[in-house]
Image (tube, rainbow, N blue to C red; front, side, top):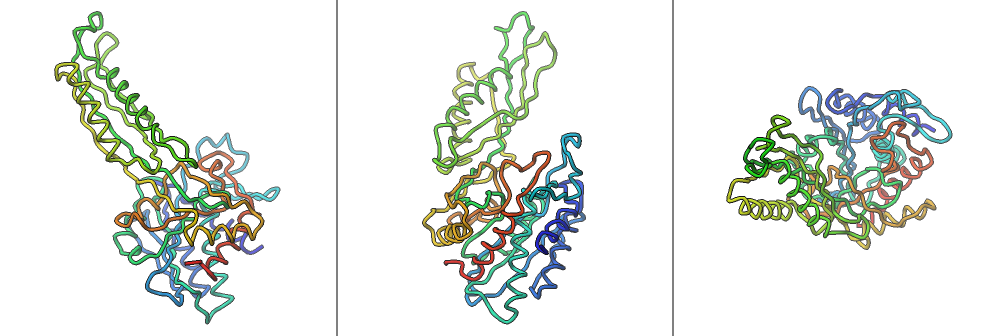
Length: 381
């Protein structure tokens, strides 16, 4: 199938975040889109980063639906854990294996193929609603591509957002938000033999993190489960026989709808003030947000979500909505318009993301193309 060959060609272009030129992926997709007769261009951001955009004009032009996928991949990891070369797509038993196969080159390829297939089949026709495609760089780290697209005005007047992240071809109606909260805690040092004379910054910072985690876990969602907070980085201490007077830690907080970064920071400050009072003001804490992404949710009965579910069922697939624990570029692209309907759908499997032996089902990939094609012909909104 030509669509499978296209996927393999896309997977063979290196796009490891922080190492490769993601602009090469953008240029490849731009050329493919233009060959199909679509208006497309590359927005070079710096030497390693670029976005690719395309526009399929519809009868309704004022409020397009935005389709989004990211160009980059995570590193390969331990090569010994792979049975095949992660840089070279390998097909076997109905699957293609390569880094990015699920997250999310297959979703990216399905979107682009569906757009090009429509334009080739109907060169002089316009679908009911315009579609703006944005392929963004740097999603796996800082979201530079999405932030640039937002600054360039590409989300202005958008009617909805559809992101091709891995959902196993089910409608992804909700995703957790994310907060990376840095805690810098100061205490008072003492001889290790006399800990009562000091204020242990490490132990108290860990206690603060545990109390904050207990608060975070009280906010839950039926598709996502509870919000979570865990210590992912920590440093502190001077010597084995000294009470540590400083600790720096980073908390990775994943927030279900109903919990915001402001709420988490507010509770962290309240806990820190309480612990400071207990030590007569010796123990102090400063907080810094290193990353903040809001939770994103669309009602399953929203017209776009309902239309997607019908298209999925038409392919004899399960259309029960799923929740996504990781954050996506959607959390950046909707900034300033948090009410914008945002939906996730792609052929990759979330459990395959960032794993050795990452692969995608070709059957799901081909069905995803058909679903995207139906959404072009009749988006439902």
